[in-house]
Length: 182
Image (tube, rainbow, N blue to C red; front, side, top):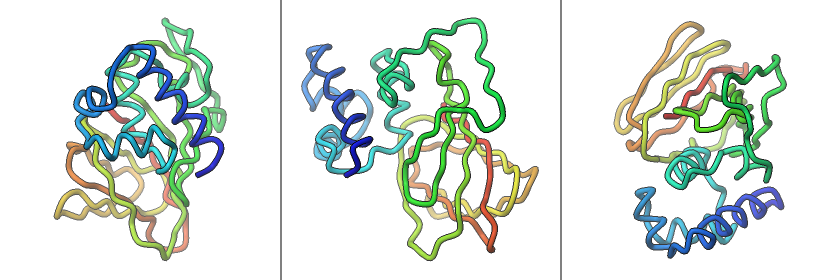
């Protein structure tokens, strides 16, 4: 795994240890299998943004501090200029920019996401909470459980993120969308 993933994994482990919790307790709290949690904490597997969001909310730590090691400090508002959100490289082909990473105690995590077309299999994941995706550019196919939805600019989808879900850009253009994880 990359150094960035290992650094995030170390911050997850440090948080758990500082709270005096076992791996089993954390896995149970965020609603995932203990073996999967352990693979995240050990930096053996890419850590989905949905998991990091749930972890940050469950243990009252900002997503920004998990990702960057720096604590969020804003409480009245968070302005983010175009293209200036916190860059988070998660899965191959995805480029996330966290848009409110400096704001403390958020009720949701808004992201500007760019997904490049790929011939790779769609990466599926699930996490506790809900997700809202609003299409800005290109075309996107969203898999949610057994259902499939195709989005074009102006379209949106809101779903229970506990269902296995994944996305793929359609055509030759990047799919650009606003993703809000709650």
